[in-house]
Image 1 (tube, one colour):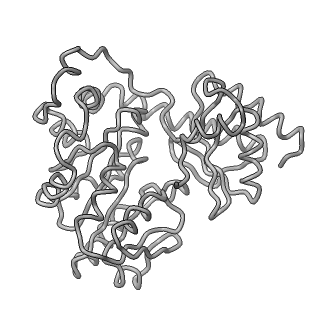
Image 2: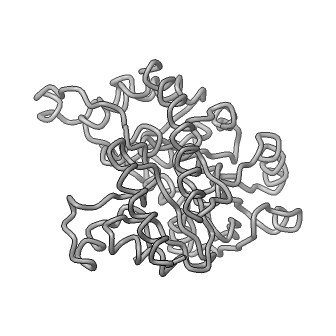
Length: 330
């Protein structure tokens, strides 16, 4: 099993603290997610309608030509390796682990690089896969860089794949509008910015013919009717989106300042998380867990990722930070 944020049930069992008593900062989700309206009973009683306007809402929101709804971006990253023969797939060494796992599962060779793919990597690889911004290091890649790499890959039939799960606060940096180009794929999710991880709604953006092939692999009704209804409402609600884009960066800055105050200075972050490299990462995760605060641990490069607390969680986080400082634990 790969490590993930959100694995709170295991933490609750390990540390003997009931689930409801935890402050979960491990996921990088918007703690003030999109409000759920009442769902009509008929939506639960019928098969999902695939001509309900969800795709049109997604194309308008992402400013793209074609979009395939998937059960979260997880489903998208699992279907892409099935759409080409065994390939060399290059990606950053420190990135969301499920990408490498999915490609290896289908017989592809994964090549790791540090931060940016160099010319040799572009020439060797059949596929280059990036998170933009990267999860967890928050490294950002410009549109010009991404399109330049795509053009070079396309010369030998290669693909560029961009996982944009954390880009919604800065949509101007997205390459979704270019996703109709052959060999360019973009993954998006409603889990992070919209805080709708439980709805399991994501989108694969790409050339129409490739999305049809992906649809064949995924099959019909991959998203429930209630999830489709909520997703469509969220994608169309520009007022809520604007408010969230204004508020989330302020909350992230507040988190960075709070962590810095107590000696855990982030090296980078997005509007939804802060990244803190530290050689004491494993011990610190355990120390936080003993206080009922769950943070995301990375072992390959020892670091912690802190998501945003809910409104009623800020004081608790500061009390725990203060307690750990007084114990001289870091």
